[in-house]
Image 1 (spheres, one colour):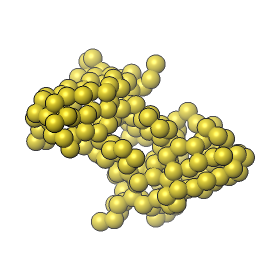
Image 2 (tube, rainbow over the protein chains, first blue to last red):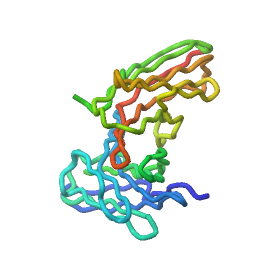
Image 3 (cartoon, one colour):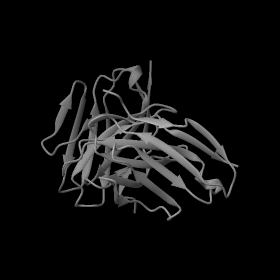
Length: 114
Length: 108
């Protein structure tokens, strides 16, 4: 059973640029969520995808968008990067059938915006 | 008010001590609750799910009080390897919210 994998592991971007982060879900999981974690903070919920549609969203602006593919992998896209977007971005997958059985996290992508 | 709130700590206790963490949640519709553990510069890892009846896994006991909307985690006979940040988590099938975490340091 493979776990959740994310790519790239580290990334440096310039303010105003766009970035795409990728995630492969754990085998058997049907739901993917993305979180932003700043240093010293808990993970902040960005959004969740189920059956290729966004079915939950946190307090993030529309320039944060995503996709889920038929194989349950996912992308997080961030447009017009700002300095405050520098953080660890975590992807988490889960099996959800009305009940959420808990997320398995990838090791994250550390994004630095300069 | 944050949806999930917990004491940030840090808690600094001697090896062998019993430690208790509490966490409150504001959304009464929340259905799923968990405790996660996060080591420095690592991803969060699921420690245990939390059920209304309470559940135990070795030295760890989790409780959920729906009436008061709080979740607790008890660690007995703490080990040096228990040093980490403990994240309280609650939500629904479509939205899981993390608390900001409680740092625990176990000293020899």
